[in-house]
Amino acid sequence: MELRQLEYFVAVAEERNFTRAAERVHISQSGVSAQVRQLERELGAELFDRSARAATLTVAGKAALEHARAALAATAALGQAVGEVTGLIRGRLTVGMIIGCTVTPLFDALAAFHRAHPGVEISLLEDNSDRLVEGVRDGTVDLALIGTATAAPDGLDALTIISERLVAAVPAGHPLAERTRVTLRDLSAHPIACMPPGTGLRTVFDQACAAQGLQPVIALQASAADAIADLATRGLAVAILSASMAEHYRDRLTALTIDDVETPALLALTWRSTHNPAMRELLAHSRRAFAKPDPGHAPARR
Image (tube, rainbow, N blue to C red; front, side, top):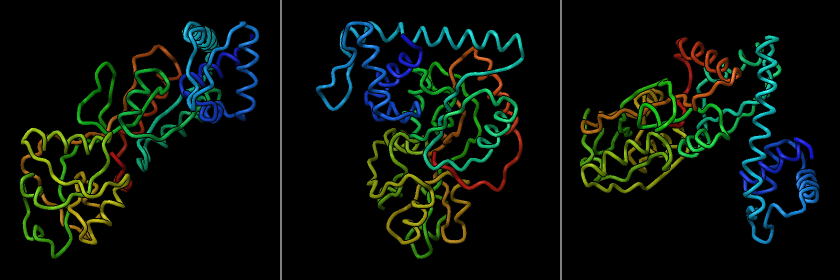
């Protein structure tokens, strides 16, 4: 039995798919399948039910999963313990970020960390905020840059990067264009363009509407601020953006304060408390990178 077999087994169990597991561990699908089969032969039991489209754990697989995770964690802890004594940090970190992220301090932090600790392998993935938070909770993601409506997701640590109010944005000639302030009820008379569920910005907007019993028509959804602004510019809907996002499009859209949405949309780093020295170092680099002003970055999806 080899550690890589346990690693591949855990990857398939968590991804519930051999192809995605292969992408995660950076080898071919056939390689993952072969190693998992070898592990099954050594254990004398099938670990996955392969009859369905998803790879689901058998009873034996469920019994083996936590032990496999524990073995991998013990191996990582061994390397960390030696690294702390020798001053060399090794291991692997998975960093998550919201789709369409253009917040360059995160990339600056990763670059600085890599220069300081080349022995740590960094994996970077994109997803929506809700799924990234779940990844941090279940340990598949070490650190995530997310959009959120709360200062810290339950049970996790967080560092708020940006806190901004939501605004509505409309083009010249729109019925609301001559106003500077609107209410959610005003907006409900018009189709809305907004980010999809699972993003922090959408969560703030939906919660504010629900608190007033309003159900505006979300006519258009897009994953990036550029797309939402383009749709609004063409008169298809009122854009719901953060203040800094709307400022980026001030040459073609007028931003309107939404009086009855006071809860800010937050951009935050989130992680689970850990004694991992690599994580401690990455957090330190992240805090330094985000402490520096970055006025030129484009708006990110939140």
